[in-house]
Length: 419
Image (cartoon, rainbow, N blue to C red; front, top):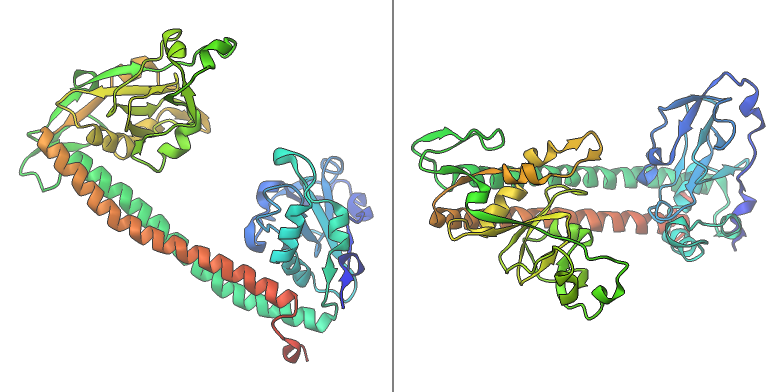
């Protein structure tokens, strides 16, 4: 037999003692401090009077439930253990206060169960990224286990079991990080050192390349590739956006470029009229594109003739430069150089002056092809290991979610442990 969740918790209760001492230090938790899987950053502090208005107030031992999408669907629910009696946090939190004889950890696990999250997601109110889970859904959600001893047994069991799963996930995520670092290092080494150990090397004069084989050249990129730039036709002229059929790379495609070497389809298309009325040009297949702003350094190779927006620099390679080798340079060795175009969290555009000043190592063309083939082979092996680890993480997360759901709904019988 079930009972509404409101029978065992208070939803969004008041905290009258919050201003008993206006100058007291309280825990402060903006939304980014509410992490997945019950972990949280409770180290931040604020003065009570400063955060008394405009923030959600809570006590030590309360359960914090994000109300906004997608944080809610991620299950970022936690039973808080504070070093201060009270705290304040983002207004995008519901506060659940367990009543007497209720285990806060059980409530937090209940709110991470598949049924709670799925039904709550279906009940979100609002539009776009401003949808929120309503208070009445929480209050009416059915609970089947109300006995404190059984709740405690379930919470103890889930603490143990999920800790083991979390350890496995942490190890796999660390492995993925190491593999990604290895992948980047291998590609960078091949791009700047070649396939075999060079008998002789020399300084390239490029901080991101270091020493290169002595028989390689170091040349201005414009000497082996024609620099082009894209454009966006006027949006106010509707006739320029009719009968669009030409692939047109824009900022909407930056995400795709992060994971693919070639691009053959684009989110947006452009028309002949749009090209004619702007400085955009139809560029040949094999052109290497490089994002100049927003996400500096994303790169890809056109698989078919395309145009681009002004957010990209486009390189049409001569026979002396293999497009795949230039792409390898852009996506590996030159990334530290592209990073220099950021100022803290602020991204700056790579101007035409900088683009024209690009210098790159230039192995013989046949060696360029050997390098990109070697990079593809070695990258493939590492990517397989990354995919296996990511699949194990995915399965572990699914196992964790299913375990929580089974336990809080009584499908795993822990009454013996409760007794």
